[in-house]
Length: 364
Ligand SMILES: *Cc1c(COP(=O)(O)O)cnc(C)c1O
Image (cartoon, rainbow, N blue to C red; front, side, top):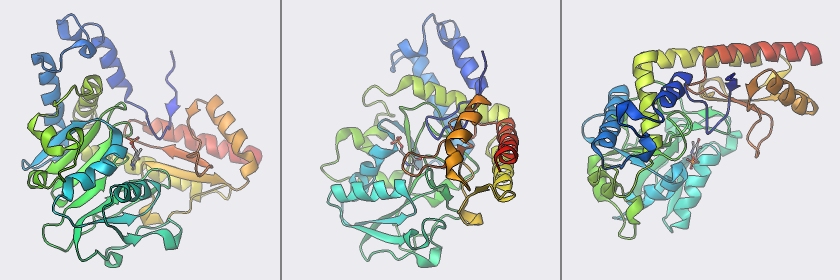
C-alpha cells in the first residue's frame, strides 16, 4: 500500500496517523464490540466521543465559554442560508465583502431569501487579486451582520486581517471552510464562524458552526428547524441524528493537532514554511505564475498557471505519475492548484517543488 501526496481542495487529505487509528478502531471500538458507525448517537460511548471532540476543539481554538459549538450537516453552502435566517429576525440588511466565488454564492443565497443584501466592499475592481482594506468597507445604514470569506479556496485569496464592524452589536460572520485551524485565531472577534469539515477538519458530512450565545435569539420565524442554531445548541447538536462517524473522525484530527503537531501555533509555523516554499518556487521561475498580491496569497490553496497552457495536460499527467495527486485547478478557472491543508506534510511540498523544477527544465 502506498499513500501518495494529495493536494485536493476538498474532500482533502487526512493525517495518515488519524486514518490508521480509525482503522485500528473500525470493527471494535475500544473493546465495545462494535464500530462507532454502528453506535446510537445517544449512547454513553458516542456522547463521550462527541464531548471529547468539542472539548479538544475548544482547547485548540481557545473558544470563549460564551460561544456554542454546533456540529451540523449540509456543508458550508447550507449555512449561506443559515446565516440570514438565524440573524435577521429583527430585520436589517445582510452586508457582504466580496472577494471570490464562495462569497458570491453566499450573497446569492441571501438574495434568494429576499433579504436586502449589500456589498460593503469588493475585490471585483482589482480582478480578485487583493482583499479590500478596512477603510474601503462601507456598511449599509441598517446593517444586520457583516459576512466575509476568510480564504477564497478557488481564487487563492486570503484575508491578512480581521475586519472590524464599527457599529455596536453588529456581528461579524465568517466562512472559514478552507482556513479554520490553520493557525491560532481570536474567536472573540467574531459573532459566527462556520466551516464545512472536508478541507481542514475531517471527512465531508459535518459542518461546524461556532456562534456567540447572545446571537441565538435572532432567528427569523420561518427559519427551518434543522437550520436553527438555537435548536441545535439546545439539543447539543443532536436534535436529529448527527453525522456520527464524521464527528468521531474530526475528533481524531483535533487530537492529532494537539498531541502530534503540538497545537495551532506549531501548525501555523509549518503552514508558513509550506506556503513559502511553494510561492518561492513559483516566483523564482518564468515558467510558473500566481497573480495574487503577496499579503493576500492563500496559505492553504495555491493556484498557479504555466506560461504555456498547452503544457497543462502534460503537467497533470506527469505529476500524477510522480505520485502528486489532484493538482488541477477548479473546473471554473483551469490552471493548477495545490491545496496545502494541515494534513499535507512538508515532504509533499518538497516533492512538488522538486517536480516543478524538473518539469520546467525539461519543457522550458
Ligand atoms: C468548499 C467551500 C464551501 C462549500 O462547502 P460545502 O461544504 O461543499 O458546502 C464554501 N466556502 C468555502 C470557503 C469553501 O472552501
